[in-house]
Amino acid sequence: MPAKEVLEFYNLKGFSGYLIYGFRFMKNFILDKMAFFCPIKSWRTQFHRWKGIKIGKGVYIGHEVIFDRIFPDLIEIGDNTSIGDRSIITAHANIPSETILKKIYPRNIQKTIIGKGVWMMPNVTVIPGVIIGDECVIATGSVVTKNIESRTLVGGVPAKVLKNLNSDLESID
Image (tube, rainbow, N blue to C red; front, side, top):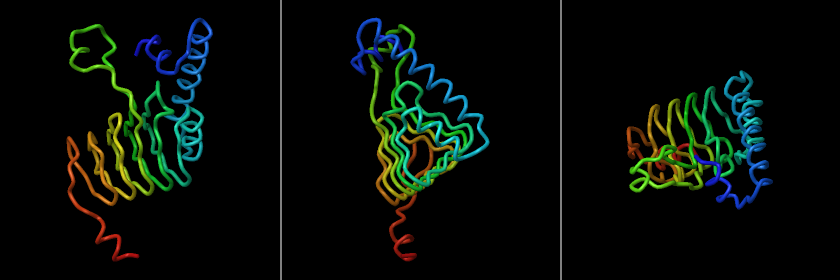
């Protein structure tokens, strides 16, 4: 995404804005690489917090998880959520090259929220603006393109509701 557009989003102006953005981007790039290769789960989580991702207590982030690198502060993860290896969670979508497709698919920057107690299995992709409710299960390899109500099992590309978990979870309570 062009730096000018990011600066506009964060209301940063002039040379000082470019410097602030440049340092923030480099800091987040380094933290991202450290988290990506870190074998210690608590450190991975802390590196992502330092990038600006709002992460609750007791969250597990698997190996090689990719979070939005430009807008990490627009991602929220609730307490006791587990994010499987090689998942991707984004808060923006943008065609970086100059093409006519930009008129059909304009820049999209939105907050992405993952609720409490969610279990995301490996290789899940979550697109910008999605809200995943509490205590959901997202099946391996799913692409989440729409909001998901709490206590729901979803799977597929795009992810579809496979089961309502309310009766299963209430029988445990």
